[in-house]
Image 1 (cartoon, rainbow, N blue to C red):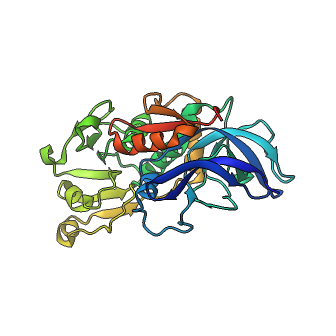
Image 2 (image 1 turned 45 degrees about the vertical axis):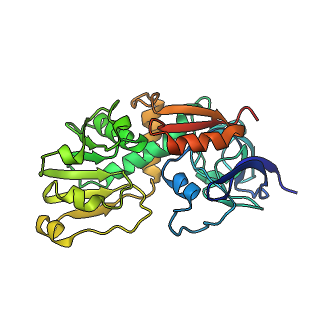
Amino acid sequence: MGHTSTAVVFESPGNLSVREVLLPELTTDDCLVEVLHSGISTGTERLLWTGDMPFFPGLQYPLVPGYESVGRVLECGADSTLAEGQAVFIPGSRGFENVAGLFGGAAKHLVVPSHRLIPLSGDPEEASVLLALVATAIHALGRLHENTSLDLIVGNGVLGRLIARVAKATGHRDIRQWETNLERQETSVSTITNATDDARTDYRTVVDVSGDSNIINQAVAHMGPDSTLVLAGFYHQPLTFDFAPAFMREIDIRIAAEWREQDMERAAYLLANDLLKTDDLITHRFAANDAKTAYTEAFSNPKCLKTVLDWSVL
């Protein structure tokens, strides 16, 4: 009989419970981990919550969301190289026996293949829930052409702010950001403006994290010839654009998807050496058994950047 765990379960879109789920049996390469903190994604998890998530492998309800968890290793299979007690970042789990997992990180205990766990130095700190987003920011910047500088970020949520901060930390200067929400037009290392108030038409490098399916036409109108647009958001509506303006400028449209191992290594280095300010990005905290309130707040309050669930109370 496998272990059980308390987990956040999306029973159906908009319907959440915190209940017991059944974990799979450990294989020789797995670890059983105890989660202490988990973050709520206002991108991917919002789409799962609203039911607007496009087709994705493994998508079915009920499901356990989450891919931003931090905890400790409790037990390891014979082939694992991790030690019991090791602090780790957990970008998801191997799933559950009686519910789906997408990506299955929002639970008190998880079974995770050991090679997917990211070892952390010291104790499993709350701020480490941001590790995947920092790696995602690094990956998005890596999609720019070599030896080019970032000009514009579209969106000033937590990922937009991290991209700006990583860019500054790695030598980019004079970055601008567009943000339509007045509640988020502050606390940035960049110059904040609204696209409608921006007279520039010479941006060479643009990274979009707005999730706005209409962004391509808006961005292209402000871009110069031979420029690059990186789509780093997640879009629940089909992306369409007017071909002629992009054609005349020869716009290079690129996509930034999931972080790679080298991105995670760089992210861990930046955080471990205090080279990236993140303490102001976790704005809301809730006990895990109050997850329904936490998810509602995370998805409805524009001042909420990153919400963290505390699993140590369970």
